[in-house]
Image (cartoon, rainbow, N blue to C red; front, side, top):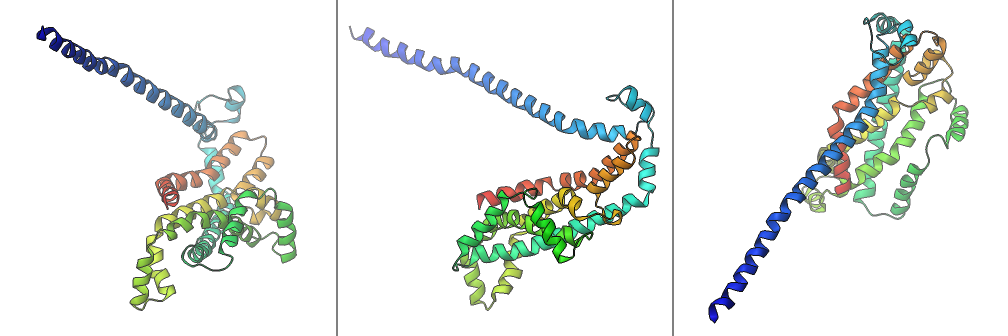
Length: 301
């Protein structure tokens, strides 16, 4: 009588042990199918983003007759004359120099001023600190298109029309909010004990800033510098209102002027457009990991 009662729990435990093994296969296949779907969607998005860039670059190697007959086709014969004519023109290199000057100056001032403001907002408690930080945060809600009319009046009254300074100064102002919001978490994450130990050793506030804060905030500084440089290089709206002299045109504005002047020569316009966007693409692709790492550190901080 005792043996049947002992066999029932054994059979039940065996069935319960076999159940998870049977249900493991559909879970793995479901994960595999979901990952394949995610990769497929990502490839589709990448293709949609890269297709216009590839069309512009390849279109510069075609002739106008080929573009007219087959706008979406590949070059029958690679025509290097379009890119050669653009690179041989002094107008293109002058606009490259203007864009470089504006982007480098904007990046330097944005990084230096933003780092000093973020250091004060993150390391010291003073009256109105929250209001100042909220003011910089509110700057993200006002794009340049909304403030373009007051900016135009201000630049005109300052006598900075038709000069790169009239473009650089507003770009610095609009680049500071992002810079401060990214750098404040970096500087806040520096332990206060480190600053106290530096002060005990006789290090001043400026010495702590130069010797400790700058080396520890290099990832954030690189991130905001890249963002400021790319934003200045691709800026179009502000130079359109400020610059009226062809000699002061930046590349985005010069591309629009070149397209209007050579509207019949579509292949050469595509070549000029591709050459004007290649520096920003190369710069952004080289420092992509720095941008992601810096933003990740800012979010963690």
